[in-house]
Amino acid sequence: MSKRGSVLELAVLGLLHQSPMHGYELRKRLSTTLGAFRAFSYGSLYPCLKSLVERGLIVEDTAAADEGTAPPLTAKRAKIVYRLTADGKDYLQNLLAEAGPAAWEDENFGVHFAFFGQTDADVRLRILEGRRSRLEERLENVRLSVSRARERVDTYTLELQQHGLESVEREVRWLNELIQTERNSTTSTTGTNRRDAPSAATAAKNKE
Amino acid sequence: MSKRGSVLELAVLGLLHQSPMHGYELRKRLSTTLGAFRAFSYGSLYPCLKSLVERGLIVEDTAAADEGTAPPLTAKRAKIVYRLTADGKDYLQNLLAEAGPAAWEDENFGVHFAFFGQTDADVRLRILEGRRSRLEERLENVRLSVSRARERVDTYTLELQQHGLESVEREVRWLNELIQTERNSTTSTTGTNRRDAPSAATAAKNKE
DNA sequence: GTTAGCATGTAAGGAGTTACATGATTTT
DNA sequence: AAAATCATGTAACTCCTTACATGCTAAC
Image (cartoon, rainbow over all chains, first blue to last red; front, side, top):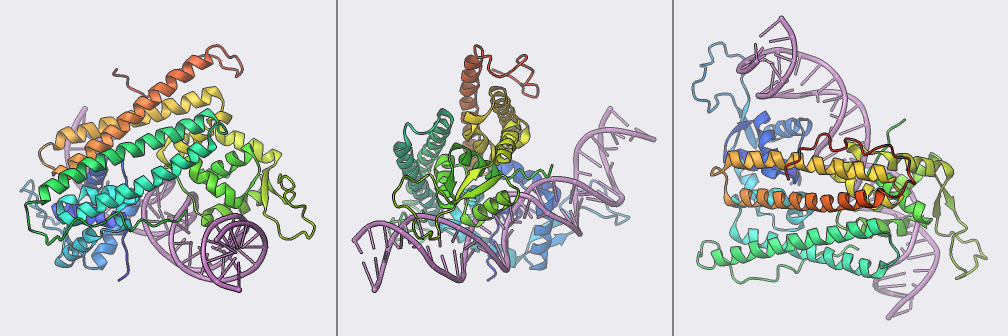
């Protein structure tokens, strides 16, 4: 139950599900797949792998998928290739089924999105809608405070707020397109037992 | 020397320089000025204030700038209004003079930008250019890996990379405009003792 | 034969969050 | 007088980074 839902774990499990890999390559893939969104250092990656092994979610697999570049006669310390266990796959599915705030907050959304290919269609939709309503909420707050503070702030602060606002608006438009696409492609497939297109924007927690 | 350059400290000092304030309001201002870029909780704000007081950079100022809403007869525990000391102002100037990577990395750039009004013109320019070249570097990496990985990745990963790419491109355009504006407005004012317009874009590859 | 990149790790700690705890003031 | 919001704080914890330490392997 330990609720260890760090982003890194999801990212590692997600990548390993696509194909077994060793740590070094894992890290490169993380950088490119997540692009500008997140980056991780070895100092967090290796301890994470260690912990996943201890919990039986992945295993070290010294007999790699390497095509016989050089048969290991001397059994020299090979690269450690990690592979998901059955438990690991289950656990990954649990993480990917998370459709609440934890999946659409800034730090997590990108990673969850990156593995949408392995995520159920209805979960995908709920995450996209959740993120959108989160952003719209933020938009409203900023707009309010901008109009309230008009004239009182210097140019740079205003410029920053303006740029932030436009960035968020842009992401909302992006989400709209994605949601549209998702809706269109799920109408025919009855694979996932969906009833209707529910509120989805309901659970926006208000903290401010 | 202690290199305590947390973003929060800069933000607090910067806001307090604009006008004395108590913690609660400070936090609200942080949320609105920084908008979508950063948000801080009380759990980090109050310890930060405490530390700043201990280091003599700010002082508690119980006689607030409140217009006589109610003269404090009973000396009841008033809001604690914080104000910059002379040392604090010096320190802030030091932080604002930082024009290296620390000022243009993702987590810091927004905050530094927000206080550009209190920053020297040449430092502003160097930060803007530093950030731009940082982003262009990132752009190149992502473009490379995208073209290398073509066909091998699923739609969502690609979509994410694409969106990230466009976001960064957009910020670069924004920076270009800002840099242009800065250059135009600094040519006449001899206020800050500037020698020449130095390399600045050293590490940046210009394609346009 | 030495630099550069691949590969794996650990120890210390920085920066901030969550959850809790408390009380004052204003609004209803 | 209850509820909301203003206001201040602390302890425990999470997640990740930096800096270090080590060795192998490919290229020049």
